[in-house]
Length: 191
Image (cartoon, rainbow, N blue to C red; front, side):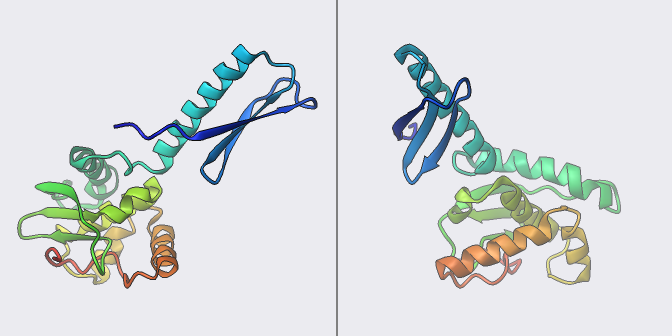
């Protein structure tokens, strides 16, 4: 089901001649338009700006609507782009499954190398795409390197924004008061 339509506030400006823009103020979308626009033009631009904001949100927060199949495809693309080039045999192991799971108490995600399964906490649905990508790469690395040793960290660094994503996740955990100190421990699921 689609998200409910946000509240929209249209602000007309006599100084604005041609440009239209939109931004969020809390739960309200504010659309700035020239005062000279007709009501029909206003309706057109409100709809257009809502579409643009939704597309931008989808790019920044790809996990919001992503299903398990989307995660698996994303993991495969990340492995091909970042890990296959550094794999000794030219192909990094792929997971048997990648799925969302209920929020974990102490982890963002987990991987069970024995059965090649990756689980991501539902909390990650709201993070930017580059952070989600780092977590997926982190878990993919566990398919070959079960522990967080030097070989693991070197492979994890194949994703260029890993260090930045780790800082983002640390800040997110601290701000939310979550007891999460690392992406995972490389072990099996939590209950």
